[in-house]
Amino acid sequence: MTGNEKIAAVKALVENDAKATDALVMVYLSQAQSDIMLELYRAYGSVPEGAMMPEMYDNLQCDLAARKFLRRGAQAESAHNENGVNRTYASTDDAELLKKVMPYAKVVGTT
Image (cartoon, rainbow, N blue to C red; front, side, top):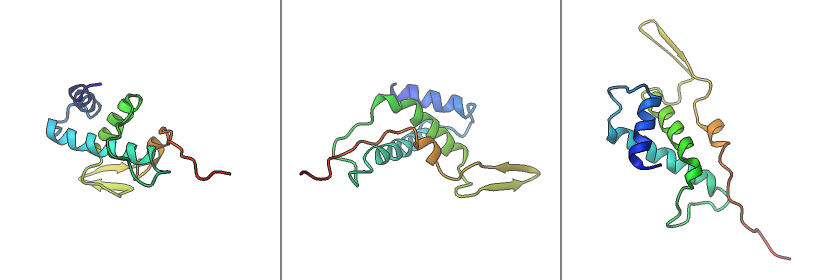
């Protein structure tokens, strides 16, 4: 999926919110990619230089970016009430989506 396709996907997921500019969506896509990469390489402690996100996680990246966009301004809130509008979030982090990432493993020792 190209960068433009990812932007279009995120905009569709947030129902073409007028505040979803290409630049802002790219920020959230970048954050989502970083989260996925950290999960992929968690056994290593850091992401290796030049590592690329596998294409199989493109849709997950878009889902994470859309979720982050929709939660902007409400980070770490489990519930929010404003002007008679009540929002309750099932989770304040993205752990349940990141469970879909299969981390790479490494050899810990030899015999």
